[in-house]
Figure 1: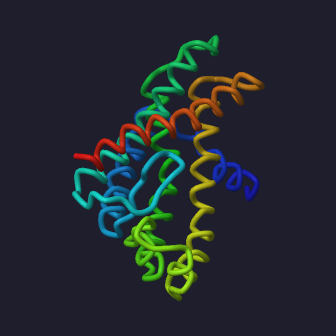
Figure 2 (figure 1 turned 120 degrees about the horizontal axis):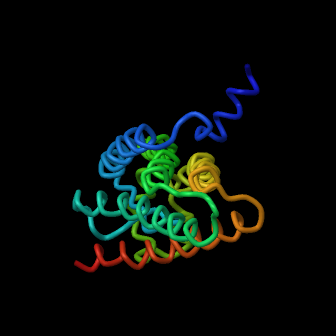
Length: 198
């Protein structure tokens, strides 16, 4: 029983997929967006987050939609090329959205004053010495390292989302995952950066 729960903790897609994953995942995206807006935590890309110059609510919404849709589209297109199975777009969209649920917990960390202080800092406006002289900044660094556990959790779930929704394994799974995550992050950063220049 404990082993089954542990397996579900690392791979929930043995139990959930399709429309139910999409429903829970989309609800999670809405909640994560609201929390990001409340704390000022911007997602610059799939692998990057922190301060950004646009505090508008729609900017946070666009960020979360982009970091969901871009990797999902890359997973889907790659799955069509590399998998021999029939792939449903709803399964890919649903599992990728559900995989990002741990972002909710990560966002909750940014209600901690020292982490909130960090998100409101413009790193370009201060030197490294000035940053290190801020006690709240040092505390924030430690809390942010702990919050990264949930970021890693998202990446693990996204790996399983790709594996299950596209029925891939071996080197094809590894190659597509690496391309979609790294390439997806670059695409997300380019698209999201447009929000900061508007």
